[in-house]
Image 1 (tube, rainbow, N blue to C red):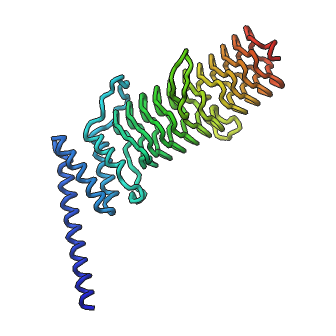
Image 2: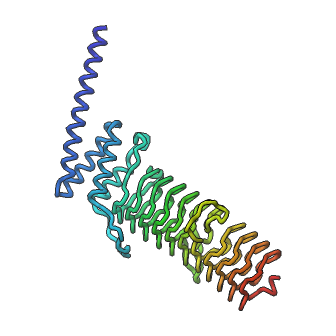
Length: 361
């Protein structure tokens, strides 16, 4: 009994001494973060990483400190500058913060969300290969991620409302059920990423890459696995000139539900000149949508609601429009050569200059 009491007392003293050492190291690291020298600040950041690995109970505190450091030292501007072709890498200290956060064990977060809202993370590079970097539920509201390279991140249920991701590479990442409303994805590479049930309302996806491949005779060949937008919410989103060929759009919502009791100011997604050839849009609701010049060649539009839609100059060659509703739609100059239009309705539609109607009917 006496020996056991001695051992217990020794262990208690060792634990107290260890906690004292951790506290001293923590205070020294915090002091380094306030240094005007970037080298000293980097030392403080990596000292906190070591503390996080040595003391699991201190991980939430370290996360809070590093997140606050990034928000304070790299505050995002309200109007981020355009991404350059040779966008410079992120600042060394901000890159270090993101690297340290990506190396943590998420099961020790004690449910503390990482808050990097309104933070400039331009040019940050994170490679989650082979495992996904655990950033689930992260708050990146109105963060600036322009030109960032983010490979294989877990951003499920994360908030990126109003975030700038123009020119960013977000390859192989999970953004299921993420809040992406109003986000800027112009010319972003979203190849192989999942946006299942994500909220992309009012997001700007102009020229975004959902699949990559080699361009031969103005046609993309050798495509890699495309992004998934199943059950995604895309009302008021801008998809002009966007290539959606090969993207899984099953259950995606492009227009507000007219039967919803909730009054909304949202409009249909803008799909002008979008590439949707061969895409499965069976039963899609696109009433009043801007589909001017869109390419629907070979697309499945069976039972689609296209009432009052702007299909001026659209390519519908070989499309399946069986039982589709095109009442009041503007089909001026559209090409329906080889399209299946059995049981389709064109009441009140503008059909001036439509090609292929006689053959398809």
